[in-house]
Length: 118
Ligand code: 5GP
Image (tube, rainbow, N blue to C red; front, side, top):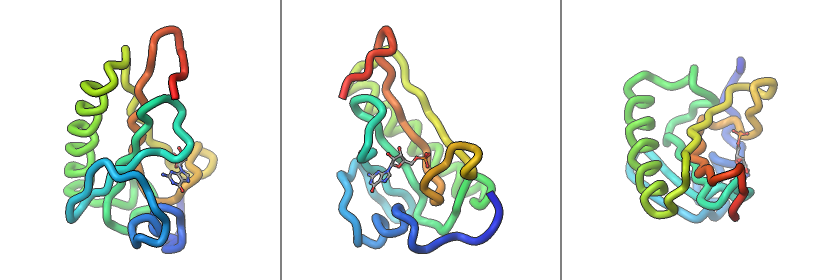
């Protein structure tokens, strides 16, 4: 939650092209890719191309762009998989449930009866 951005975090390596990912969308400011350990079928991540550890490290302008794409990609995931619900999740700090310290939004399709469909 406090401190410096670690340029060796996993998503920084993905942004640098050092670790592969299944890309969903990419432009100059945003990258979206499939979560490698999906909570449900279609679990997707959206990250900014700025060195931000969490929600508190990013400018409101970049955040606005990031949430715009999260909505847009979330809509595409919804339309493709037709889940009953879609959870948008975002964690800040280890105690807050964050495990990768580069800001990201989760798009998690939710299926009936809590069923996990990988
Ligand atoms: P957090 O708990 O920090 O919000 O979520 C981090 C997410 O990153 C988790 O859902 C985890 O499955 C995902 N993840 C961790 N390592 C990798 C990786 O190397 N590649 C991809 N695509 N996702 C990862």
